[in-house]
Image 1 (cartoon, rainbow, N blue to C red):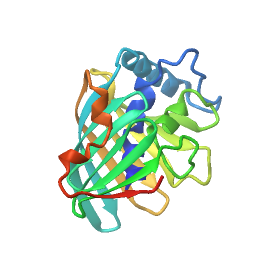
Image 2: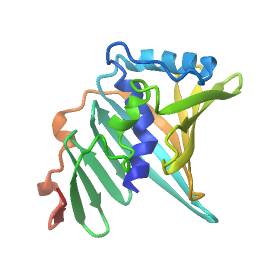
Image 3: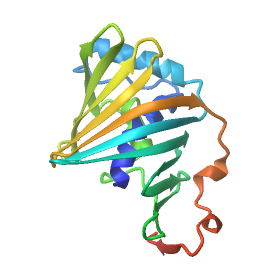
Length: 218
């Protein structure tokens, strides 16, 4: 589940972290219209030092469906995701995955080069490494535009990602990820705002979790 949480909000991270100088363009196979839309989004989020997002996540696996409400906080490589069942926190060096039902937190090292973790910092290479993805504009209406992303890495656990973007607000409305096992994850954006977030929000504070069991896997 931590992989999915990372992948779902990574799109915002790659946008807000696109302040890097001279970001490389998408591969030549990408749709120029899609690239133009994404560059417009990137320009907007260049001014965001950090952001908060309220979301609704629909998880579909066969006939089974589950909906979760949650919040995302993000600042550079640091992030925090909260929903009904767990929390995932990263300070750019460590990742804390807290499971509410078990009152347990697992600590691992944040590894940018870990191919198994669809982490925000890894996904933000979308703008820095032209060998990661291709994208195409798949739908356009009076209110929105939809872009589909496909990973060039055939070993990726997901086959594609679709992003619906509001024309009037110039911001994502929905992100849908299609996993190779047939499951789907749909993130609907309820609210997204520029925010001033203190760095202590991206560190797990055990004093706020009475009797929590800690498993350090670093």
